[in-house]
Length: 373
Image (cartoon, rainbow, N blue to C red; front, side, top):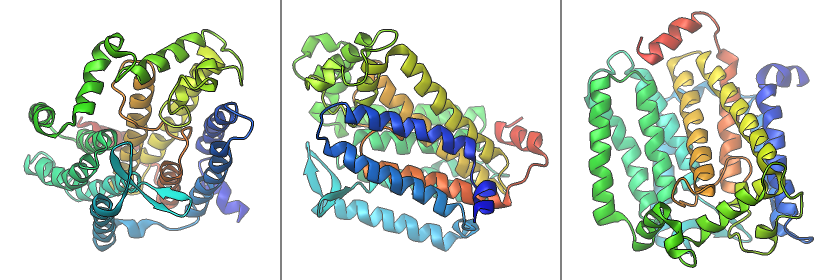
């Protein structure tokens, strides 16, 4: 068993995860002496790491099968539909199922399912990807969950699904002409969403992002307080347990959406650089594993997973420092929550399981193929 762990698991990636998760736990535990967020997060960290290591033992090539992927897609879609009817409403959004003392957010595993489905679709049509019809057909696979998540409404998760689709189109080898068409379609879609889909509070978040000081006690309060927290950390931070914005409850959602700001206040610019370095190491290893995938399916899956992590990280950090609107997205591996942590563990576990059939030959040729060279 130890031998399989040594060969199946990317230990550089695994060791980069531990301090990221630890940073989240330390920050949560500094909020109060008796903190149930910390206690539950320890459990979810253990479960997600167990999922990663456990899945690395299995031959996961069966995930290429169309019937398996169709079943997963229908299951995920069914849960999103059911959520709209019987889900728990929290802060105006029906995004959770609650069972006992635990909650489950179906949009998190649905992002992983979308990556798998798109990896399958593009891997079978990679040679003829120049045909523009594949952009629109693949778009339908992402459009269904995108709309269902948007109806909750969960704008942040809906945007992650969109960027997963868009990013996987780019790495699959789309022509520049077709890429322009996608940009044009995205612009039109954004205009339609603004006019007919966005809720007033979502519009207010975007408008307040442009000038948070216009409503610091209302829609701009979260963004304003998070920028104060980040800035007050200065070079080396205030020290663990001395972050006044989080401890005095000025910073909202300091265990989930704004844990990056809470961490930055206590650890400063030096700590933030460490987080960026560790997260960069995770993305590097995910992409490295993708580029030696046994088939186009494994390669596209790994790249889709990297896109998923990068979008979550970029948007969360952006909203914490006032560069992007507040969307409610978690930061991978650090934010409180079981659904996203377990999804991330399963996603990386699938990647590890795919290492069994990885190949190293013709690596440069495969890179050129994906870059369209």
